[in-house]
Length: 277
Ligand code: KMH
Ligand code: ZN
Image (cartoon, rainbow, N blue to C red; front, side, top):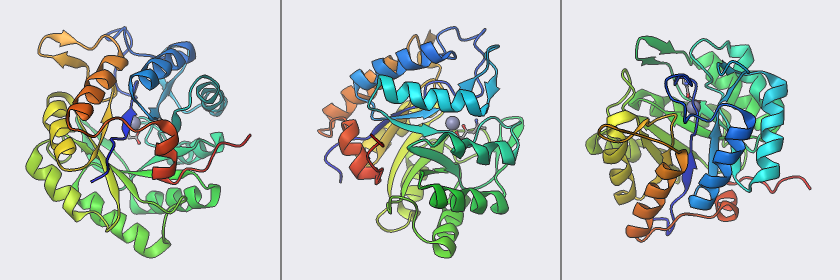
């Protein structure tokens, strides 16, 4: 079991509406402010979705590049851009995310029902994105919403070899309506099915947040938290700041004798090269 806990914060996502969730960071200033607070609270990675001037999800290349630069300027966090985007984004737009040259990116290993929508990741797109990460040397995090996605991850590695950085790190995204449920039995089954040597984080959407967090800590996994996944801190009590989710995760990780992993250690752990000077 790793002696420390990698904490990723996913502060924004593509789904929540700023008008309904005023605490959601949507401007670059809000995002960088959130990132600094979350780093101080124990996060080492930030999973980034950006919004346009109307707070709607966007994959605008200039904004993505500015976001990467601002997060690097303001923090030591590993900058992981979402290639999942919103369910309405095109495959071409999602591939072009890598033009912003982040440290890392998400890479979802299959299609999944997503509430009333479909989050589309057919094999042709998954393998194109994977090969692009290898070409650009952007370290992928394999997002697994379902057990079938684990099978696709094995296929990807079997056909195209190891990822940039050489290490396989996955994120089990649990409790999405349409994906695998966020309970400890499913978490254990998914973790057991991963490729040998892979490490993993887990996040539970909505009500599955705490069961997944406690299960992951107990099973030697790492944690992703944030307002992309969780908008209620407790029953009837909305999240007011992303940092309070990171603070809670860090506190529980320390309690489990696996304290938060600093960003520099996380870079080595994930196989992410040092930033260009
Ligand atoms: N917004 C979801 C449709 C990712 O970031 O890679 C996809 C998602 C996964 O959030
Ligand atoms: Zn995301």
